[in-house]
Length: 212
Image (cartoon, rainbow, N blue to C red; front, side, top):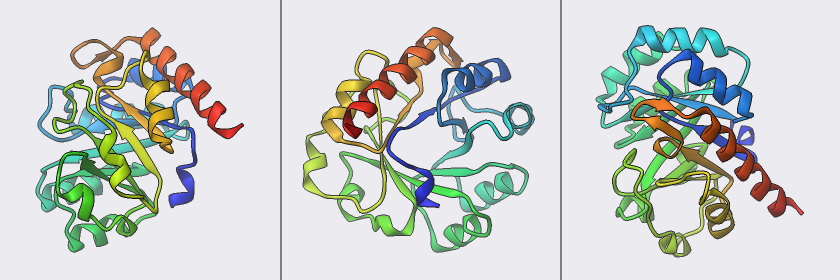
């Protein structure tokens, strides 16, 4: 499934309602993320089903887990029709096998400051998402450590991105894609639709320059 993530991939994460999901689609994003980990942006199964029903066939929908136990992740995935799974934390072989039972894009999140950033075998997954030390915090971080290793799968840049810095980040990292959450919010858990549109437009412009 790695071929799904071509350069120009743009994901808006932390979507909590149908109106915001439709705004993400209208802006032309590649994917949206539904968070099932402990977070102010966590969605219930019922909320997720409403969003999934309203977005079917429009873009990739990602289930995002952070430090959830394997059984909890399996239980969620049994009831979710998603095309992408994003794992923050341990990815056991048993969980990997479960996720691979269906043709889903599997993304492993790595903190740029962690030991795992240097040691994780990226060929186990379809893409890696490079985040800061506190996912969802909106805090920016340095990308200098990216020079310490070369990934053999698509790389998604995340952590502190917003409409004003996404182009600079794309140029600095040469990433395949970008992921944004708090940087396009109006208030915690609710998206600012204009900021979503600006983020996607600015990212698209930057990606177009890399293709020239």
